[in-house]
Image (cartoon, rainbow, N blue to C red; front, side):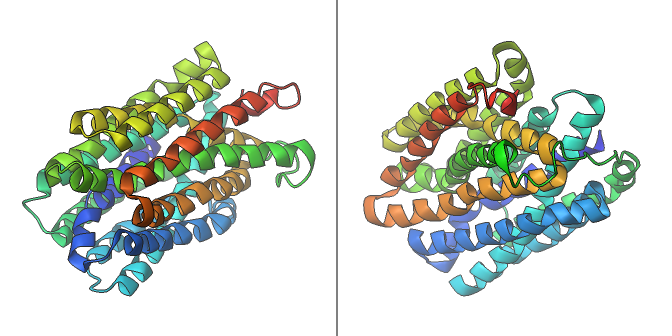
Length: 376
């Protein structure tokens, strides 16, 4: 369906930016701490957008919001390659983050509508296609790393995504579904309903912290700490994207067979071990395997959390849980940058082990009688 292709295109755009982070850092001559500030500006822009995107989806519909947001994001990405100062980069990334935040809520709200209409768990599959798009974007970035400048690369991908958007716009709008009505009150402000949404957000935040940290810093870790070539380092993110895509495409089956708690706990422990291996090894191959383990472990946490939030509160539930969860994405990459200034990038990446471990008690909480329905 057209919606799945937009998840894929979103992944392509995200990976296109990620694999060029080292090039942008070198172009500006900034420290890891300075880069962390710039990444924080992007995360702040995304977080601000998420606070209002639910209302935009409720007023205009999820799919028109998706079309507008992906168009603006595609136009914004080439601008990232233009700044000559860290201040200009911060402003550009903040604007790009605004577009990305609106697109994120639009896509996830549309996915909740699809789950509601088909009565099938499709959220993990759609997020798997996002990861497949990330893989495609990372592979393309690795191939083009030595052939095109960053600006040329961004312009090429922008043109590709805009063309696909124009072709897919009418089929996407034809597939519009009725909005999901909130399960209880719609805003989750009181009692167990509000707590369930908050815990969905906490789970999403733990996953987002790890995913954001690995996405933004794995390529730099492989290149600078393990001395991998630029193209090989970009393929490291590709391996991570393959793992996430595989885990999400099979996630619905795993949840039906083993239950959400088993998937969450096993995944958390796998991610914890994987990030420690990737951070502290001296081997590029072991680091690749570690990042793959992180991808496999964290892959289904965010989709499970956001799908449930949407089932409880519709677009407003998705917006609320995503905003809470986005604190992980907001704080993750810049925190890694600041820590790297003090203890090195390997030590900083180990912080992902803490947030991965925090998933375990949250998942076990969902087994209690009062919260068993939260992620089932």
